[in-house]
Length: 239
Image: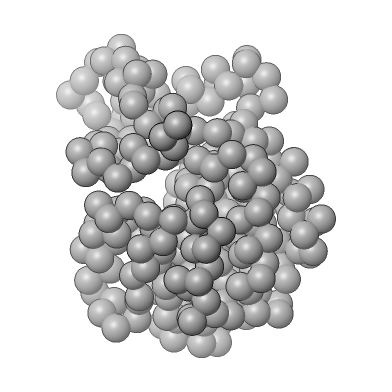
């Protein structure tokens, strides 16, 4: 059976998501601010090597390079349209980033980035939730193996709601945010697009508490959910 996350290899879907959906993510800037604060606390003020896993258009990697002038990064994704979007976004950082086509749904993805390891930080944004839970846990273990001692993993991620009522709260907030950035559409029109978008089938959500437990079992320290609003969470830990 074809993997649901293959939808992200569709250029039209990628464009629709980047232009019309991601801007509605609640507390998006605060999520990035927390990520950067954690990286700085883990030693990011020195020369920093990082991996942006499932990088999409490079929004997280770009923020790291903006914040840390000595940083250099590897941006990895299995979607060529996303990698092309990342190259365009990162044009001002020529020479400070490598772009790697890698599918971390398969264990051999580490071979594509291992030449650049160990990393002082690994970040990921709204990507790993597309993997089945067993594979999520395996990916976290593979990330642990790529980190330098003291390195940090920060996952800016879509997690599951514990109840349907809270899930509905998430949806209402997201639609409100999308409506605010699409003032030419009615809220009902925005909601219709949101509830019927084709990428929803690729979401395989897991509780943030469970994922933090996996990280602790793997060996991460200082594991926590550092920021959360409904289904949007920033969590991770240090090696």
